[in-house]
Length: 320
Ligand SMILES: NC(=O)c1ccc[n+]([C@@H]2O[C@H](COP(=O)([O-])OP(=O)(O)OC[C@H]3O[C@@H](n4cnc5c(N)ncnc54)[C@H](O)[C@@H]3O)[C@@H](O)[C@H]2O)c1
Image 1 (cartoon, rainbow, N blue to C red):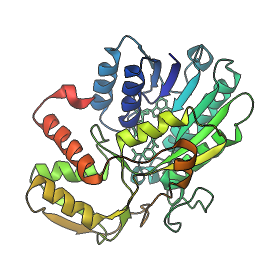
Image 2 (image 1 turned 60 degrees about the horizontal axis):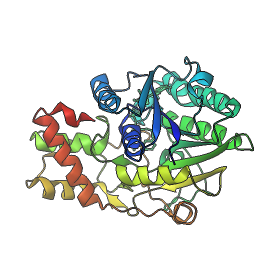
Image 3 (image 1 turned 180 degrees about the horizontal axis):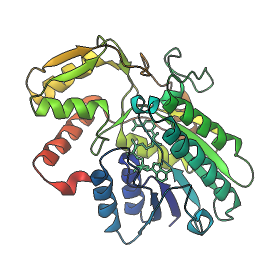
Image 4 (image 1 turned 45 degrees about the vertical axis):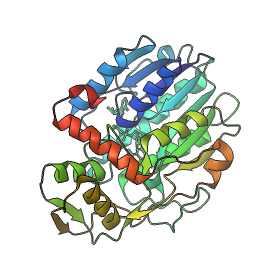
């Protein structure tokens, strides 16, 4: 059935994939984006331009704290809230921007969604950063110990969402684990490493390489996000991970193998705010969403590297 969705942060890495999927399924999508200065706006503009080619898509440019949200929400049944300021390291310098983009914006959207008669569900893009250095695998009912203002603001926004769950509005928070794939944000580790390796530049590695990550391919994230709109329960947080954990050293070996040459590594001290290990317990995702990740890191990384190669070759159409 054709549904009207609101996707916030529509010009962002993950949300632009989500909009594309919903449009291909024949839904109507209203996309909000404030084109914030979190990274090079040309990537966001290119994604928005690609979406605008689709007749089912309407772009509402603006920041969530400034827009007439009640009007924007008219006829919308499901809100996918992905707008936010992502990234751990920058959050130590820009705490007030993180508070505005993650917490104040979420509060404004929740208030408007609760009052909008057509909206039945809001799905929020939370983060594995809420766990900090909790023991792996992270379980949703375990401790949350954010290590950075980013993790803290994602946790506060998640709590606002889950507290708002009730008869007027159902809410679900998905805790995404390091998302990668074509279109990945330019400030994210895998993209920085892959771009440096392809350009034969040194790769700056923070820490000794023993830290580990649960990487999640973007199309797996989109699958779980779409399923969350229809899940039988609400008022809960659900992990969405890639299903396995790999050390940074192992990741770099994989990258070197795909690119077909040794990497020029420069070791630097461990970065403030980064968790040592991340790993998702996927029991809840399996039980409530019927979700299982489908893409291995090797396949997903090859897809991201192909995309970066096309970008480097000057094909701007792939920016989306
Ligand atoms: N990428 C990951 O690995 C990851 C992991 C966990 C959680 N998340 C969360 O998923 C969401 C999307 O992440 P992404 O990597 O696609 O980031 P992104 O920066 O590419 O996308 C976010 C988009 O939201 C827009 N935006 C930010 N604040 C806004 C506001 N208040 N009003 C309107 N627009 C606003 C930005 O301009 C940007 O286009 C974020 O909320 C992020 O915290 C991402």
